Amino acid sequence: MAAGGGDVNRPEPSRGPVEPALSIVRGATRLRLRVKPGASRLAILGRTVLADDQEAVALAISAPPEGGKANDAVVGLLAKAWRIPKSRLAIVVGTTARTKVIEIAGDAAVVSPTLATWLAGLPDV
Image 1 (cartoon, rainbow, N blue to C red):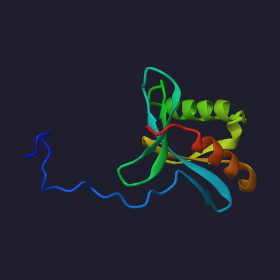
Image 2: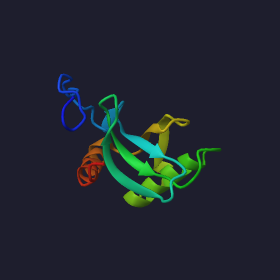
Image 3: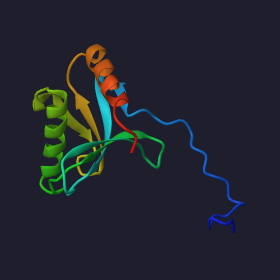
Image 4: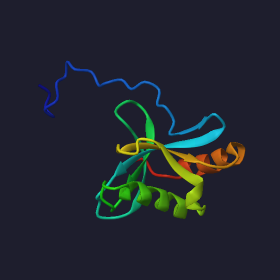
């Protein structure tokens, strides 16, 4: 054992390429999210990399994960942050999971670069 308690014979796990959180699927812009429902606050925490090497935007949601309340809070938080109507956002993957994919309606040629700039400004968490 090393002085810090780690095993010197065990190499650090190597991370493969990270799959970006932002994508375009069939002409629509999508963003991967990691949601913490039932948190003490409502906030966009920043960018994170999930265990499967996928980047996601981490969100803290104060609503409980029951009856779609947390999903509604996710949509409301992002709509407010991006100053767009909630009707332009839809959770298309993971409605009952902590990892979700949200689709943003609109011209991907306009939406994607705007979200890429927003995403680049988020802190790593």
